[in-house]
Length: 295
Image (cartoon, rainbow, N blue to C red; front, side):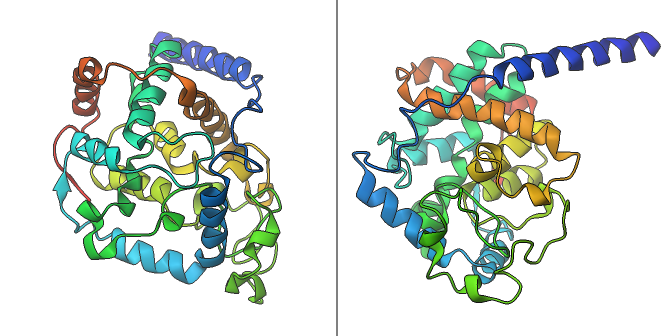
């Protein structure tokens, strides 16, 4: 038992060292251009609508609706194929269908973290929650893209200037004038933990909850990558740190590592998807999400 514990400790130290080295790479200027990209009009419209309508009340209503998981049973591959029909209106860098981006992200992770197959699967699954915007799944509950895509932020407290387009983009949000929700701490306590915040509703939280509901065995650090990968004001700009708990340091490391692949893979060549699908299907089986899931 002692030898096994020592081996696990050494492995964890090795992974931490790799994460530390990787974290030295900064985000490039060629991505996340919210000032004058070729998609500026649609991106800005999406964010202003998001920052107006994402409230505590809206977040509660969407959780009540979607976390019933009564929208049907579908495999992950069926959902990925549906993402052929979605181009993310919040993304200034990329106008390809979202399904292609998922495979690009997964393959880049696979190249650089070959021993962490669950990490490869996270790369493939991270954006599948965007099916919230597709009528094939959502039907009469189909959401506008402002309620599905884009950077996330906690509702129930004052917005941070580090959010895309700044605090000015929240001017029409009714929670701004709320006596509690409009304050820096809002409805939370200091150091309550990032996982205890009510994030703006969207594909991150939904996909995290789908995987938890269906018994996915990806390690929690991988599931947290999915849950918080769009929380750029926190993991990139270090806003909302008043809510961090000591345990959030590990979440932050892995989320920052994941986001390098999510961001930079947008410029990669399109992989031979038919060739690599069997590999990812085997990972789905391994981590208990190979069959039909409740959505």
